[in-house]
Image 1: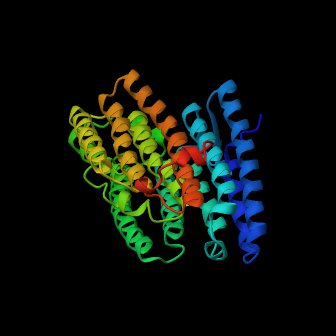
Image 2 (image 1 turned 120 degrees about the vertical axis):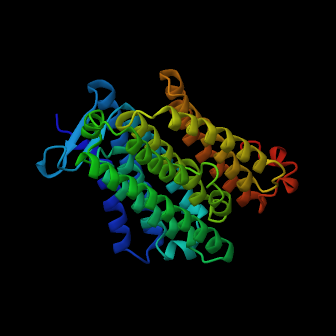
Length: 369
């Protein structure tokens, strides 16, 4: 059977965004197109997941260039599960966006940018090439920055500047690691790298490369100490955007960390202890930051940081059970955080505030929330 289903989800979001750009001022049509495109993308993701579950890992080589020279897309059970959850979250957020996003933001391209963001996330989960992982990360950063600044409020712009500055720093670390890795191995294909790295007898250089990747992915995941951009930025955009950010954006950094430190590198004891130490401080700072917050979304933002710590802690322990636990936690957190931010948006719509101190009697009035 053909493996084109691997990239079908990506192309559905791409063409949805293109058609929305072609109907720039027709925001109602864009909204319905967004829901329709997200539904078909979800259906394609379900088909992909079922095929991977029944047939095993699927690969697709772009333009018939054989690996490790060509661009390769790979869908295993881990990546297919995340693509399915991302598509489900994207469908839910697109429906919420039709009523939860104001007309001003819709007129300035909210819907196509949203689909570019989801496309970037899915591309990052499916790529089998570490440089193309970087490319997909840049698509995610650009799309998320635009979504964060739509509306132009001062708080949004301040949060977006911090977000962009730290993510540029993270991309610099990531790209430096890629350059060093290519210089050592002459390859960027993840499966090929795992074989070539095993033959390199330069442990200190490999450890340096590992640190660059850890800094890059750790910053994107809001790991201590470079986490402060997240609570400064995630509470400023509309709830639909915050749901995409809180549920999906930081998780792609954790996914990349798990993928690289299990498939490409076998982390040294130093890297393992570093991961565990960062995990402990991330959990503590996230929990302490959440204490006393009366804004629901600020509270959720610090909880994201706290829970990222649990995920990288499992990776740092580096046992089969611990890594399985980190993956299960990652999958669970995508669903939970997306729902929490969407629920916060509903609360804002029905009560006009997200201040916990002003939400007394919410259950009595709206028990379904």
